[in-house]
Amino acid sequence: MFNCLHIQDFKCFETLSLPLAPMTLLTGFNAAGKSTTLQAMLLLAQAQRQGGHLPLLPLNGSLIRLGSPGDVLRKGGGPTLVLGIETAEVRVDWSGRMLVNPMRKTILSKMGRT
Image (cartoon, rainbow, N blue to C red; front, side, top):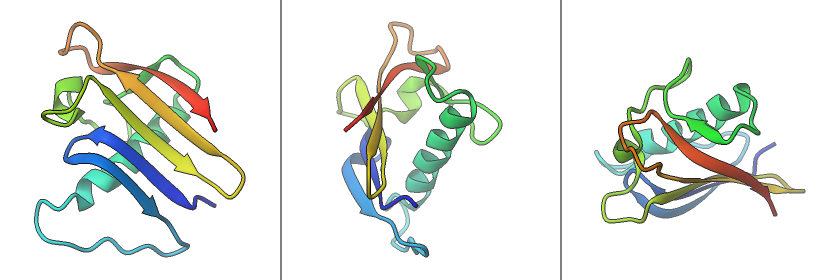
């Protein structure tokens, strides 16, 4: 089971470490990041379904369509985003750097375990 979701420089989040339980409820005001949190989870699932070890993070696929890297990188943040999942045994992060062409529909990424 996943214990924590980690997000860095993805859409509205500079940094987020969200503890997860068997039932996690997301509540908050409009534009607080509830949908963005779910989008990050779907993006991780989409990357895993497409191989998980590929060098590109697929922003548009069967689970979610997020547009271009410029649409998902936090405004005012750097060119790199990090999405990660943690279990009791391991943490896996996908870190992605925007490609030179921001209209390309993928982000160059690498997966790392800590």
